[in-house]
Image 1: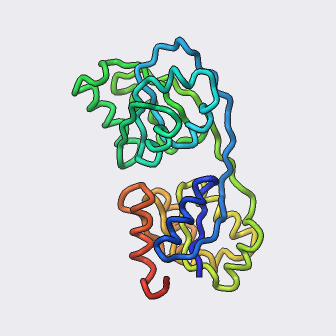
Image 2 (image 1 turned 60 degrees about the vertical axis):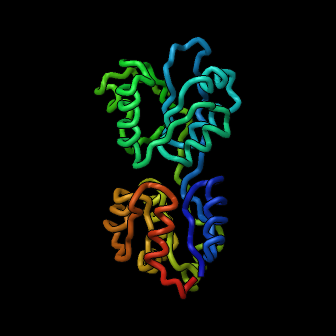
Length: 248
């Protein structure tokens, strides 16, 4: 049996490879689709740093003329996955938080305390269209000037890819991985539309956070586990705790 990965492309392929390396089979059913939004930055904008809460935000600026100006600034990334994407794109000075947007805000404040960033700094926030946490407002309340550039949106996918519904009906899926509240809702909509909601929710649902887990619990899922920290390594640990080793 396989683990169903609902993560969007292209990161879902990396997740599938990591699952297979741990002894699992994987099926891909991305429930959100990436769409870039044109970036309207200016080369002479006086930013002191860049805030990045998703690797998707970086994809939208990789070919923009302003990228070299941004790449010369310190980048504050929400987690190591996003930090690695920033370094690969060309950012030379990247620091990473763990624990989500609130931890990232705390990290930026600590950087001021250690005089690595000036008090009242102006930050360029590369953001998505739908935000789980208003990081700009949080940082603004803590004395920063935040200029938000919405660089991408994630659009819900209507329905499962071919064969996924049949895999549920045939008992070929052992657990489902969920990476955001919006993708979890899209998963539920697809399961209802395919008439497999009951069988889908009877399976273990492994979620990246308690907030995502709440969506599945409200829908009636009984086997829901949340990662201890909001990263994929912790999700895999949660999966290992949920799925008996003998079933791999």
